[in-house]
Image 1: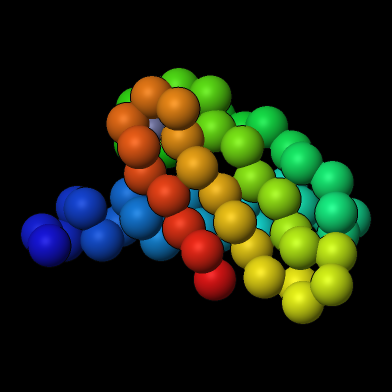
Image 2: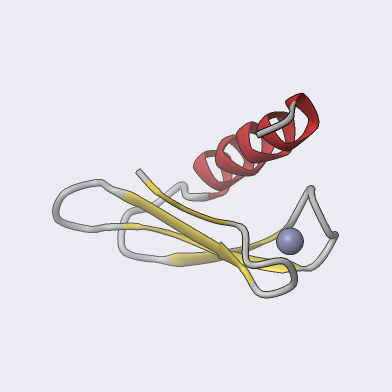
Length: 62
Ligand SMILES: [Zn+2]
């Protein structure tokens, strides 16, 4: 991975973390990589963060 890609990925994770205020609810946010629609959700039970962009297929499971 190049620096810019790592940067975008970290931004993506940070935004996803930020928007997920309540567990078990899904939140939309704007992907920093492609400005497309991305969805993030924090698991109600184990607190894991899931996020996926519909535009560029950036995704995270944490
Ligand atoms: Zn994207």
